[in-house]
Length: 350
Length: 80
Image 1 (cartoon, helix red, strand yellow):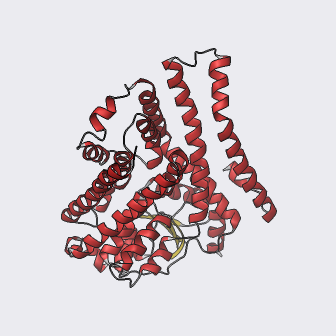
Image 2: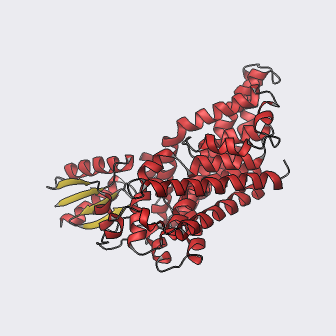
Image 3: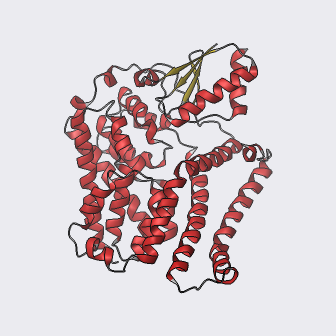
């Protein structure tokens, strides 16, 4: 809180703050490698070629690198997204038909600030306001699947092509899955109380009219709250990444999950569905596995199944969806991810 | 004053309830604080992102936990 209350209040102060904040992150990111080299090799006199040193180096270097990336990306994304709101998205989607509606919903799902913990009230809000069920699903699928933080990290770690492929594939899955759910008349599998809910109250636009200062404040708060929530996942992920980097034999993963194994993508998705982490937490592992030669399609499929399909979300959604629709939802999204994985393994040279 | 904290029990919802109680105590406002966890009722307020705060049946914030300063402002404004 103390940091937040220290934000300058003048317009010029805001700009100075943003520039200084950005510069500090870029600088720290740049000198990160040098600092750990110097500390480990010169100060502690560890041998740069030993396996243990390499693992330790990977762990500390990556912790700082991923931490800095997350701070920068979460902050930027939160400020950009503060110009959108779920309420505005719903207004845009109201009265849209299947097809165009699905495309719009998937796109809006990406840019609307939305926490999957609000999936249920948002679902009720959309459906009760007359947004078609399939269109609602396109939104709900795209929102966690195409995660901006993941986009930012893929972009910095693997380049814009992989980031673009990830966005395109995620959007496509959300559009098609929503369209299919709209076609199978899934309304009969929605708990009836959803349709009976009367939307009362005034619609408040939670993000309209915020000052830049408030948006900066939101950005900093979001960085704090996300990091507080995910740091254990992050450390486990980086630890596993470091272990894989230093100790896993080069051909170990290739043998079981390389392109040669037809079931590689399937196994990755089946492992990913019950796992519950967020995109940022598994990124260090993705990076280490990629280094070991795992194909990008398999890795993207793994990441998508971890973020888009999770047990806690299913349990939440069960309040409004009957089991049949949950099964359809998992089946449709899961197959979409599988197809994407196999397709990209075939298309992307490693 | 009747204050309602709308949220199905996520972490942020608990935080909002706690900071609201603190702010009310600090300002010395007499208010009853209720928790609304029923999804139908939450949606009934037009709220789509939780946690949300309702003061005397008016939704004042939704989707995030307001800062203590902002919360005090909202409460004093509503108390007048």
